Figure 1: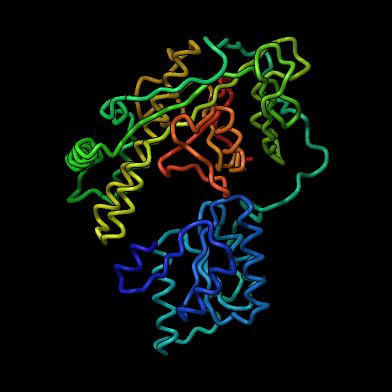
Figure 2 (figure 1 turned 30 degrees about the horizontal axis):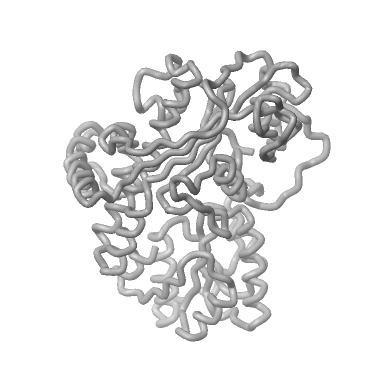
Length: 416
């Protein structure tokens, strides 16, 4: 958002990530800011945003408009719930461009070019569900310990080893074969079809830019792919997945608690594994992949030097290459477990989960608690590939992602 606003004539004071509310409000007063923007990436951000707005009320700062966005927040939560908390104007920004439109409108109001005293104050009447991802609503009573719709007699695949291993030196070209070109070209880079192009023609045209960007990244050694992955003995216990130290299953290494759907079919990731009461031994796989620190460092340099176009290109490439590496290594894990032949025939099919089982990354609806990133990093000893977890449970370097790999055939994406 910083880039979009700066390029449109706004002065942005970027405080960075993991900034406390007192530091933010001090910066607002020091710079006499016309608006304050906050991004919520963690599930607990819903509570933090509410507390921040209440503190602004207490300090008499209701004259400062507030823009809220990020993965943990939704329009419903901001416009229906948080607008009832804050005594000033509060807005939801789906993306940087919506934030730009809000600031433009606020500028018009300040200059007296339009008159809308309710702008940013009234509660939205959008016909959307009251349930919001990230809200701290308690599970209703009477939920089952296990979804009755999930089979408990599916084949179990015994992994070739237990514990974790490290892989380095993968080919950048091999990883790029697993790029989601739609996500990269449209979502990250912002390209669109021109002159009536169909999708193949569009991708062929923009692929020339991709080749250029990959050549630069390889020449400057910016992409350093590394992986740590492993297979572990596990068992489910209600909403919990117990991970054992070894196959004797007499010591827990860690335990994950996953949310359960409040409505039928009441799915929970733990349901896809055998219960502790079962005589069967079940296994789960975990992986953590990174494109290394150099791409993040170079992105920061480009941003600081105001080379915004180069920054956007490299940042988008780094993010999608991390996703491509995850896709590639998920394939390797399926090969290790012995069911990769069940994959769909095309790469596009893999992006649509045309393979056995599922891959769940923390922060998404089926496993939203980012605090579990620390558990995965500890389990896999992620420090061996230079990956750490921040106090806010973000993985560093930025172009890093982790996941649990589930072999149960019913394990597909769902919202808990």
